[in-house]
Length: 346
Image 1: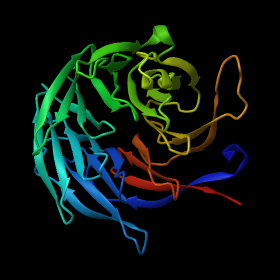
Image 2: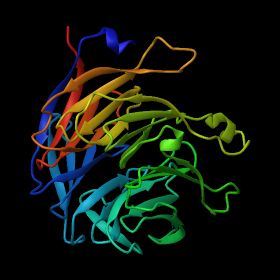
Image 3: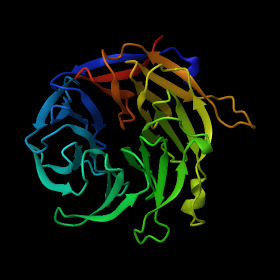
């Protein structure tokens, strides 16, 4: 469907109130209608949708484990485990026991604030990153044991986010050093090396890179930055799937002029809509243009911009994995999590 030809609107479905400080991150459970959010109030809130009323309410608050800001939260592919990364230098693993969540493991090793945590597609690895400039890969062992498999050094500044590729065990990190680094182990032996650095010399960002997201196929990536742009990248991942070695990422296009403050978050939906959340309190939605330029490759158009989506900076935008309705969660410095629905207006 060509969304550009329709009259689309982002409708606020519900405001989720409860955090007493800024909300840094929101994460949808991949299996159930559950949303996790984490905050500067040192807690994680688990929000659940009622099957009857369809409204969202706070099911439980995960507290008294982290002693400082919880910066990032990420569900395992099974939806049973939640990893939370904190400024206290630890990453906690929580298990959903049905009626409650239990902290089953605490990962320690970073020298200071942990900024982000991500599971790989099979749930066999976790990655974390920190202000200590390092990226750690943890192997998930049996019996709630997690073993540090690699410490990856290469960034020269605070690492803002880590994200595993959706179809391969390739890890991406972005940093205050303005770069995105790609980490890969060629031999399946877990010996991860930096195989590519995307920086200004490769048409990359000129300031802090805050976030990374992939399209469903995994052959395109979007990044966002303090330089007020979103950048689209692509790679021939079929080459990697067929064992022909590393396929490098190349810059496709830059989306600029849509936000006038730092773009803190971006997320690519399974329906191929890119969302952005920024310091201008606005949410942007972008779609690929149907008119392909054979010389320059794909281009992307603004579908809509929701001004004043929050009262303060937007730190996170996340599309729901559910195919049934186009739900977007946003988290902000205003202490709110909001759930939005993308609707066609007649």
